[in-house]
Figure 1 (spheres, rainbow, N blue to C red):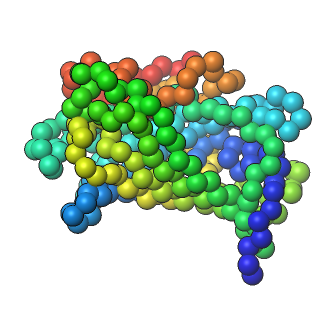
Figure 2 (tube, rainbow, N blue to C red):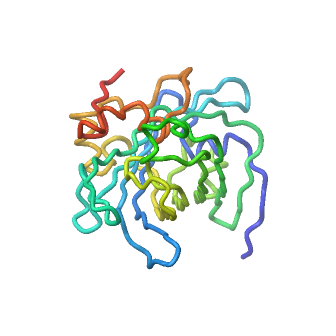
Figure 3 (cartoon, rainbow, N blue to C red):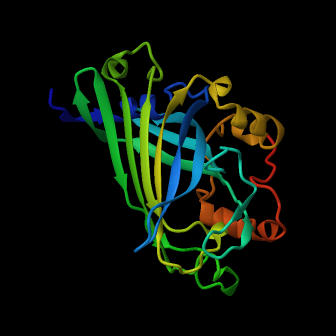
Length: 270
């Protein structure tokens, strides 16, 4: 069967990415690898990764929802899969602190139509996103060794596959299963201290929804229970602040990075 492209309502995307029930937090997890891609060099596996998002959708009016979330991605040792606190840069030999992703919040508005590939029992939402904007670290001499590029540029390629019948099932606030594929091409992370060295990072990950906090990998349950309880729930409503990114987080916590502190920083529950 050949997939057919259909324009689906925002409600279908809300059920896929989060839930129609604004009282519940929805958890999505992913795992994968990050490779260095440098002209003239063989691929190099730098990290394994483990990530999660906790999200909520709040209906504003018929057909329109606020989406609010918090997300974590941890960089793991590629052999032991343990959470890294330090990393030896294989090109410079310098040992640097590892600043894990702790984006609070990540937000948006869901409305209108969402194209999807419908193929019998499966429906796949495909999003090819190419963020390009001024690098907030550029122009500041203290960040020259970390991220001197004038422009932040990346490619984020998402595919989320769900059971077709779940989308039309009015008894379900959230689909029963999500199969996530996420690939990314991005610049060196600021904490890697790669300056303007040629090359990019290639991300390859898969994941899906899990059934509540207890469905998270044990590493995240332990971290959230003891160090970052803020990430146990999504915000109750959309926050009137700028979305957090790894570049902004690095800027905000640069002194802690230089001091060799452990990341993410402690984050109390609301």
